[in-house]
Image (cartoon, rainbow, N blue to C red; front, side, top):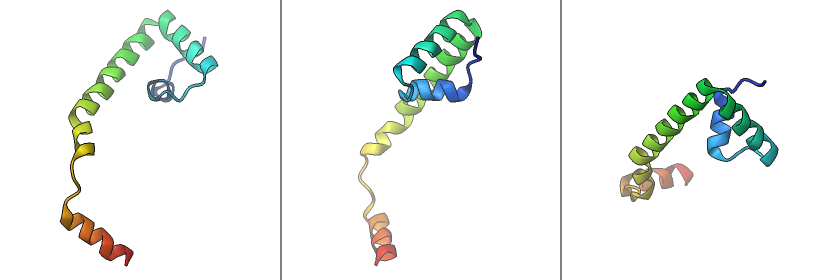
Length: 74
C-alpha cells in the first residue's frame, strides 16, 4: 500500500490529481486512520488560511504601490 505524503495531500486538496490518482488517494486515506487524520488536519489549516487571508484578495491596491510599480516599468 502506498504511503500518503504531504505532496499527495496538497495535490488532492488543490484538485490537481487526475481521476485515477484521486480514487487511489481516497482509497488509501480511507484505509489508513493516520492518513485520514492528517488530511483532516491539513484541510482545516487550509480552510483557516483561506478564512484569514482571502479577504485581502478583494482589497484595492494602494495608489502609492501602483505608482511605484509604474515607475519600475517605465
